[in-house]
Amino acid sequence: MWALCRRWSIAVAALRGLCYITGDFRGNGRHPLPIRDLPGGATALRPGYQYDERVDVSEPASISTGIAARYATALFDLAAEQGALAALESDVGALEAAMAESADLRDLITSPVYGRDVSAAAIGKVAEAMGLSAITGNTLRLMAQKRRLFVVPALLAALRARIADHKGEITAEVVSAKALTKTQSDKLSKVLKAATGREVTLKSTVDESLIGGLVVKVGSTMIDTSIKSKLNALQNTMKEVG
Image (cartoon, rainbow, N blue to C red; front, side):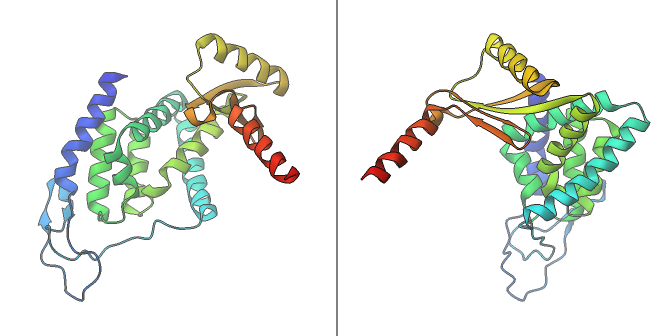
């Protein structure tokens, strides 16, 4: 995994030189000066000049979710047809890890200042460096051309849900004050399996502010056993008494 992370980190870092755009994006009435050519036919403005291809990435969450769902359905169906669901699941995990670790990758996906060609070339290079499957890489390039890379986090969540459903599994999002041990994770998985009647995949994150305990979300059901939650409840009770 370290070697994989290093490959995509190097790829994204190298692409920063390809994608840098540090000009005036406020729209001051000037026409942008000629762009410079980049490898693969991609283009970007030279630093210091106005950029004329902005995109609003602040669409309502419901719209973003709808866009992501359509891409997820198409990608999942294509992978199923090609017998490549295992590869797709691997791609989802790799992209989730990469986005969690790389600020450069998050910037590439969410920044409105990169042009279509630059975004497509950059995300294509990242996909190649990470060794993603062809269908995933091609989908990411298409999303870049359509100015839809900002829904990638929602796309990954939708794909993970589709894959889990296909395998008869459910995903439980677990937040704990410190990382769970394998024994704790196995025990929690068994408890959740007994409660849901399905195989459970844990998606664990750490939030030290919880102090202790867990916050577990399975579908629309949330179980909060954290000390932080209990302290907040106690504080609210004391306010009512006062």
